[in-house]
Amino acid sequence: MHFHVLIPFKPVNPKTRLSCILDQEEREAFARAMLDDVIAAVTKSAYSATILCTHPFEHEQAPVAVRTEPLNEAIDWALSQFRCAVLIIMADIPLVQAVDLQRIVSTGKDMAIVPGRGGGTNAIFVKNPRCFRADFYGASFLDHMRIAEECGFSVEVIDSFRMSTDMDEKDDLVEILIHGKGRSREYLERLGFVLSIDRGRVSVKRNTHEEAF
Amino acid sequence: MHFHVLIPFKPVNPKTRLSCILDQEEREAFARAMLDDVIAAVTKSAYSATILCTHPFEHEQAPVAVRTEPLNEAIDWALSQFRCAVLIIMADIPLVQAVDLQRIVSTGKDMAIVPGRGGGTNAIFVKNPRCFRADFYGASFLDHMRIAEECGFSVEVIDSFRMSTDMDEKDDLVEILIHGKGRSREYLERLGFVLSIDRGRVSVKRNTHEEAF
Image (cartoon, rainbow over all chains, first blue to last red; front, side, top):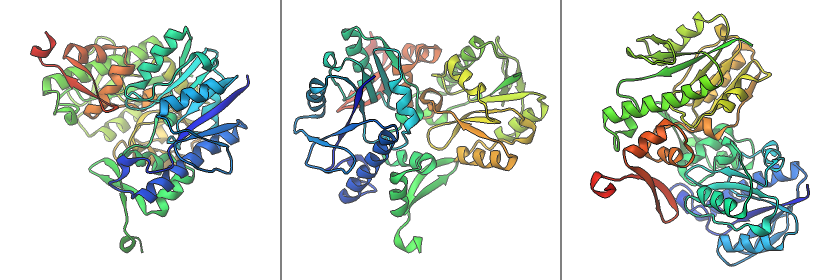
């Protein structure tokens, strides 16, 4: 089946809930490293992708469409352009592997959806995107299931820890330091992030220059 | 392959990080509801299970072994008793389904491991358990991977959102209200828990009697 991958991405001042441990420049570099990990999984699968950006941005491995409207409207605009199936995948799930994407697009249903933690949606594959609309805020998993029902789509829910794990808050970085293998892990380690275990609970801490050397 | 399921369970004063929203009696009933959901997946798969308990406890669907030593020592004691493969599975992953358990035990490797969020381990299947030892605190996923290496085991990491989702803190309950279908969802709803969405972030709140009627 012919399909295209769409990756929404915010290159400017992303991931503000990480401001407690990363300044704006670092958050932008970290978001870019996560995007690279997602694109690595896409290109390893030999899929073609477009990055849907809020601001001018360039990437050597994928074309960029810049749209200034809010996320859902931008995605709906993109969906209306496609004449083929679409896989929408978030740019902040750096644990994703090529094999995970293959699980999604090999669905026998009209649509496959990957829940994110906290009620979110981290990926959607729609075979007939022109009938679909995006609703990526709040409990978006339930909203997307409702929209699928309105469209009359059969749906497969894909059960994946790697793809459910998006990076919003400090403790989410634990998952990269434990399970990550790509650029986002490299980047965090370069900044001095290490695991921190206190009374059985795992978090991350950032070694200062003084501590690191 | 013949194997047995082992489910560690703490019936008395469990889940203390939920004390902010559930009193001790409610936490005990909630832990029991989650255990029932896990056992439902086990019995649907026609597997046989033993509950490994810290305190005297009875369950109509599975025998109980009461052990007073700490969790890891209790599991190691149990492993030493088995002459067959063992699936150790946590009692606080109420989203687990029978099909998920089948994914684990059909591994072609010597061991399969299911990471939990935050560095934990939520299930382990070991074909030769007498060579293994449990290490269920802190970053237990990394510890178990190291122990598997020491044992010379080949390992499959099972990628599952449902099984990675354990219930430790208030926001974890979101997942039950969105994805749950079993007794733990019923129990939370009976207590008045509903989803609460504030500026795109999803949490839970508990309606008091006054609000609910």
